[in-house]
Amino acid sequence: MDLPESSVSTLQLVPATESEVIESSTLGSVSWKGPLDTNEYLRREAHLRNQALTRNGGITYWVLVDTAAKPTSQGSRRILASCETIRKRALVAQPGEAVRDVISHGIGSVHCNPAYRGRGFARRMMVELAKILDTWQQKACERADFTVLWSDIGKVQRLVDALSPRSTLEHNVNLPRASLLAAEDIVNLCRTDEANMRFNIARTTSPNPGIRVALIPDAATMQWHHAREEFLAKVLFGKWPIYKGAKAETSDGRKAWCMWTRTFGIRQDEKVLNILRLIIEGENDFDQPASNGAIENIQDHPEQALVKATAAILQAAQVEASAWGMSSIQFWNPSPISVLAARHLDPSVKIIDRHEESLASLRWHGKAMLDGAKIDWVNNEKYGWC
Image (tube, rainbow, N blue to C red; front, top):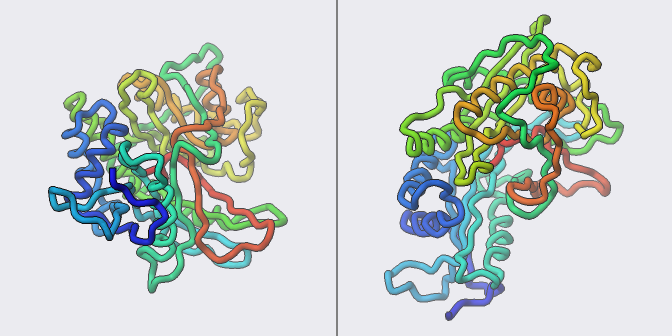
């Protein structure tokens, strides 16, 4: 096969044409279609790029091509590798500065034709993409601050895994009543969440604070995830899920709520209810990294009411997961309160550090940092994934 070296200057990463989007999506469907057939997968992808998050330039499809090569027999360019980027609203908080609204991009659907693998094309594509994203869709060609990627290699991802859809409540304490959230409830909750996030990202007790960044969990982002699950549910079951999350309140008026989505895989263990975003009002005062050695009894926790409210919404998630035949419930980067609440419902729950699949990576594009400075990705949860 007459292929160029991945280092030649004639290789360029360019926005895909409509036919190239279909071609690259068809190639990628082998890996990503799950229980759908290829035509259904292509319809789903077309559906997802017509959402509030992705319309009007919100998603860009990229292809790596050799500009020196002759067109194929069909008159098209040979696609050496492909990917997509989704524009995301984000926040950056730097020491001594006001919190800034910025545009970030999530990188997804990174793919190389199996016949072309092992030649460095995917690596070359990512190098070229990093250069483009330095200024892509930024105001007045300003430099971007950061971009994100989920891949099968990279930093360890911490999550609560295998919270069973069936609750074991032999030692139940009285939980507040949780109410289920429908699509029309999402917008106002997302506005509240964003306002709280703007306040909290500026707060730090560290004597040497670094740069804190966060993707904004806005309604458009949640609706994109829900459009994904609704399409699959309609194709597979002839109906779509009504409930998108749950909320509960403590006696003193503080709230806990979560938004979720369902992943419909082929194998039973791939059918998972994913918590997109879990909010526990007032938890920041007690926010320490969760571990398997944390407090194990609700009665022993200084914020017992918040733990109960969190357990109530996770219990609602269990009921919903069971109704849709999910094998487990997962949420990323758990806090001590959320872990304690989960273990109250299912004592076998463990925190695991995942070393493969959907591992989150962040690339800093902004100003050079001082030696020893760090970047803290705040609220790195499933909602940011693309």
